[in-house]
Length: 287
Length: 134
Image (tube, rainbow over all chains, first blue to last red):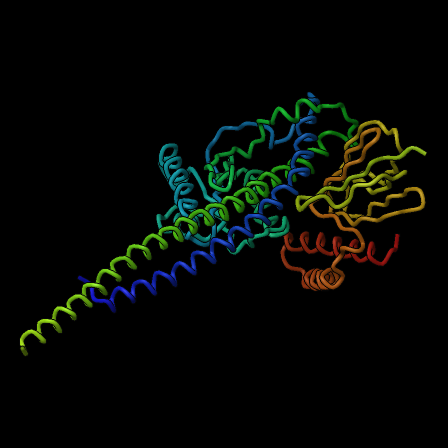
């Protein structure tokens, strides 16, 4: 049986760990609140831009733009959004596993695809496996501004425009609720599927100067907004995942402390009993 | 007098939503003035100031590109960034202006040149809106 001192030491260290996980849980909870708000304030923008894009893309017959056309796929781009830090449960591993499987299913050589990563964990994962990471960004703040990611978003879209990649998929954790996040795959480019939401609101517009000029401005902006929206969604998921992970860590610590305290008391009692027996035995020997 | 509902939306959230009588802005094809009852229209905007006039009030907004969607009773401006004069970070705009000017003087590659030019435009636009030059 472990000595009293050993058990006491373990109880103290578990308590300290619990303090840390508890603090992290609370920090994540407040960050989750902010992230949810950010995601909410982005909704009007994305709804509106989607509505206009859909009405132009569906309404006019003569409007064409490279971003709207399917072309033969020679190289695929994968934009993977992970976090910079771990301790978020399965947040990163589930998304990386999914992307890894997808790539191995669809591609045989590294020339057929390229990766763009947001977040340190994703970058390190693919680099370690010698997979081509074309662009990466790390250190995105917990409350990202559009300006923070505008550069990488527009560079990624530039890859498509320049013909370096022929389609672009984005992988991120979609925030469903504080305890559920799902790995989501979304095809960003070429822009082919528009939500039903856009269809209903279709109204015929005048275009100044013409549809093509507008698509030229609108589509890159739309694609960038999709990327930003995915990032906001992923940030909310990250904080939610970390909050849940830290909550279960705190609960486990509580359980462990309970068990340890029980065995500490048992050991203490055993020691006392033994001492008494010794004293009684000693006294009996003197008589 | 009839009014238009004007809403300015950016990825970071709505900037303004209010009723005005007239919107004037600079589209890529030239200056546009919009009054209530305009036919539905979409036009891309340049880096410029959007002026809003209402009864006894007026407002200016610095937009960095984006576009404008017009409906008979509603105008929506979608821009990647849009600021009211009171929200403009003047020091940052001044610094951005100096940085861009320096880059333009140094004349590096073409891409840098174009980016610096855009940055300079945005900074100047912000400063102009802030100092009420329109």
